[in-house]
Image (cartoon, rainbow, N blue to C red; front, side, top):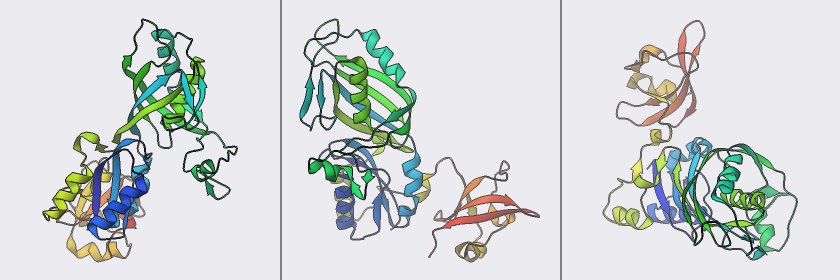
Length: 308
């Protein structure tokens, strides 16, 4: 059993707990995920089954899209709604234009300091482990990319924005971006304090929440003997050229040996040196990832083989 599951993770479960759920349900150990999602957050969590676990680095590299709620006037120790209040500001007003200008200033390359509740390791310990012990340690800022940040809705009672105003944001960002930290930093730049009061991931690379399965739906399908929720491994690489190979050269691929373009079926005319390709069997099973190279002739060189 090999493939990818587009899971709609419920709030309250850690990514590791979802992995454990699938190990029990499918009765196999070789299962992982393609990008951590905070326990309090919901949304797309790629689950990798069998040989697909070897594609985790590709899935983690994709940009992500989140919908987050920013609440103004209250900062917390965890930068989200689960933490203790660290700052309370009830007497302020912010114009919608000021908010829009501040949000725009975060678009592009920014620096973020990982929150103490993150899984980053410092001195061999996870930050969230230290946070549970009441310990705070210095953290190195990291560069991340905010590709887009847009206001979807604003809930407030007055014309100007003030304490308790909730702003629904859509954020498209690079891997490694902490949305809770983004919300906290927006509050700092506004000078009023803020925290992330809600978060859901609507897109992770090629996976979208509109096509995701709940854990209950997956359980029901498994009980019926159906694996329709299991996407083929090549779904993780939708932008790669995908070509089928002749069965007679599968053994060469298995041993990591190059094959020639004439061993490929229906070779695209646009295939050029440096292209990465997905090699498939005639029945559509992923055999390997390969690169088109040139020696004294064009060759297709596997660099990650999934055959056993």
